[in-house]
Amino acid sequence: MKSVRFGWSASIAQLGVLLLLLLPVMSGCGPGQGKVTGRVTLGGTPVPGGSLLFRPANPKFNAVSAEINEQGNYEAVLPAGEVQVSVDNQALKPRERITGIIPPTVRSRLPAAPPPAPAVENPNAPTTPHGRYVEIPKKYYQIETSGLKFTVQGGDQTQPIELTK
Image (cartoon, rainbow, N blue to C red; front, side, top):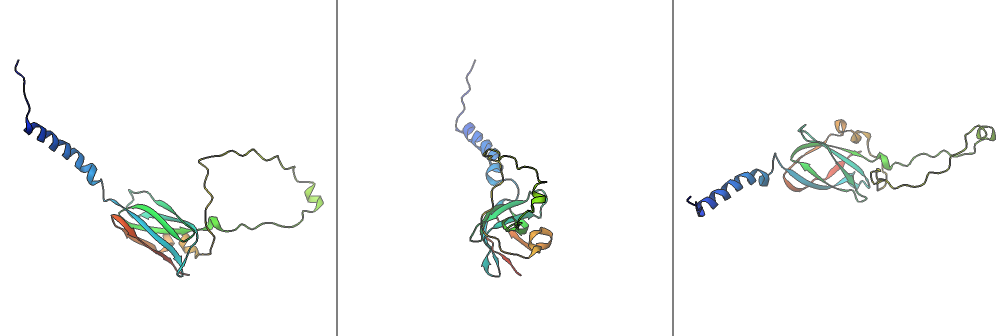
């Protein structure tokens, strides 16, 4: 039996096949994505908390959310192309507290309060939003009415989001 020896030409051919297989992975699939940073302002003043929802115009991509920090800044990785945006800070709105004295006749009909449950840490529990509530026009809460949109380019970009009263 005769042994077959492969030389440089076989190694170059194997390298070529490997590169052809890796080319789609290295170049990425689809149109790409961009890292978008910016500041959300209302009348030129930073919005000190809340969240953004970015909905790509291309329906094959999912919506992406991002948190607005106390200085009004945000950061999100979004698919390239046009996106619509909504801004919501309602979770930061102070809740009204009911104050007053419960009359004895009503208090006697109330069930006894159960003892508090022991604290259990849940890593999947929703996080408490950070920041401070400022009133923004309600139209910004919904993507359909916000009127906010821009085009995401591949790579890094800055996109300020200006809200008006």
